[in-house]
Image (tube, one colour):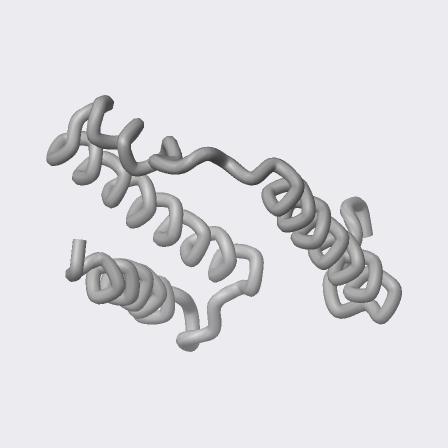
Length: 105
């Protein structure tokens, strides 16, 4: 698991390098480039998940996820709400200032 950041960067770097090597005049379309990067992220994350499941098993994953102490519900709800507000405000501001495009444009 220590090698995950290295594998993560190597897989995406190789995919992007191959994309630029085979594209005309070494210019890749942004949509294709984003798709390649997202696929690299998905492949490395699911590969890490597979390695963790193989090493720990389902019982080991449950031990990692389930808290050993009593869960503090108010703190958990506060973190959940704060992260959602932060994400939603980022999305609204990014759409308002055209930093990201909305669907269909």
